[in-house]
Image: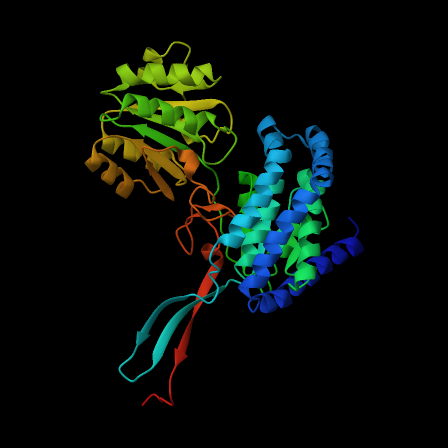
Length: 424
């Protein structure tokens, strides 16, 4: 790229961020009814434009091999009538949720008569960087604008046609309903250098949210000059306790691993108490292998399962996003907790147990954004948690953790009311 072109790109990013900042001030004042009307009408228009959106998506799917996308990544990219209906329904779900803006979180009255209210407000401008997930385009736009924010969307080039088709519909409806014109912007340049320019605009961008592979997220964390909301990867565990019900253990494990292997809340590691491994591990692994899953286990697991490969230590750290699972046998609940906290990604971990004390200890001791008790890791999802949609799942501990929906895209301010009080 020539120097002039680089300067033009930087100026484009600066101007985009500044327009978003101006729009965010106006978004903070938009009535709930206007935001909901935009969401509902956008859902209707998406359904109406189904053939156009799917045609745009087909261009992206056809180009996927040229971008080196894996089968799992191509599956995330692909839209069909059912998935497009899911996108439209997601917009309506967000419209049906309470508007968090203006909510009084708590109030106190001081002895001098001052009334102190803690009131929920938008964050401001969100820069959202994501890869080949066109459904995420609509989800992110919906929850950012419903929560009173402006958003700059930087989707991956792999989904460029799909994202553009979706955003053009949302923008057209936004203009009709009276939302600020620059509250929703899609970055129109594919140059990766644009991401770096945006990450330096801390005066105009309040929060960066990366959603995609580890390389993307690490780059954003390294370069951002504003706070970042993220999870690096999803090495999720299912632990089968000595008190586990055999039928529940098998059903949950197979679902957690196989229902959709290429997502961040799929199970990548199976941990089994040695006391029940001889009875439970073989049928569970046979069920997994029947679904095409490769087993990589420790010495004890390999001794029980024909066809299992001996795991390396790296296998226990791995997010496979593929039909592979690591297996570890442990002598106690404490050892299971230690293993998960050492090798896990603090994303989602599950215990299968009928012993309530074991469940309580696991939930308290496992350091993860979500802990499942006798349920699949696949439930760690904004829609499944009743958030309507999510902009990502955070494994951070400050500001927000777990699926991030409307409230997670807000902050608060103190509004203090008096009748002439002065401080002596």
